[in-house]
Image (cartoon, helix red, strand yellow):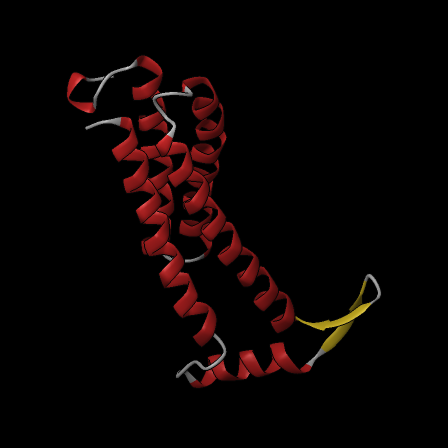
Length: 147
């Protein structure tokens, strides 16, 4: 399997993650559990000043969630573009994929610790695939050739 395909598979995993996160983003504040409803209500009602703005915890939660949606969308586009020039611009692709892969591995660990395994697996596997893809094109070989 060529590096281009591996990077695109990883980008598709992030797309699955984006779709799941989008569903969660638009439904987080309407839980079925009674206790969670109380928590959400408390998060929405109390506002406190922070750096000149009065915001609730729900505001922060929503804002961070929207930022993650943007990050995932940007990552998908960047990675798809990188996979398109992976063979022609190996040095640039390598320099871009290395930190992206490391960050997605870290996202996977953080998601496992603080969220749930499915989200963690999408990020972690994508990060590993980016590193595999990076090594493959860096060495100019296919997955079947080994690395």
